[in-house]
Length: 253
Image (cartoon, rainbow, N blue to C red; front, side):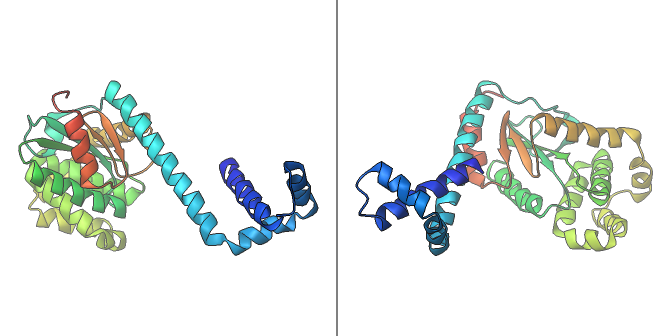
């Protein structure tokens, strides 16, 4: 808010400099502002689009600056998520690049992010391995996460299939909840009897809690978020961001 106020003051000063051309000094300009405070509001009302563009540009520049600083810090001191080989769901287990994804099956941005990860693995079939972790935002998304983890205990390809079906069928899950999850598990050819028992296992609930705790320790405040060879990516960013970090961290895993 303080920065926005500063932008407003700058815009107002520019307006007054043009409107009060008779003022030959800063003191006269200051007095003009004091004597005519409404001119500031009039200017802002007449230039809403320009003001929005200035503020939006400033916000984007600030975010980019924060991203650059954060990336430099993480390249120097990488994040260290827990890596359980049994949780690798895509790519070769010994691939040189590791992507740890923190996601929510009912998040539309996560569905978009999942497609980007598919593209990344397709482009680097032997070079990237993916571990899918969870930051569920509701009881239903938590239940979906439990289904996924229980199916992963059976077979990673079946877990991957369930993962894809869940993201493609978010509306169905919102509407039908566990009935939709059961249908998707069956379509993924999971052993449904084993699944019904495994989703109640205490260690799976603890795994979800550990995922969420780890994500928050990395200061991830939303989904999707990623750690690529120790460097964070926040949000459903383009494939080029993942490619860039993989190049920057090559040989440093």
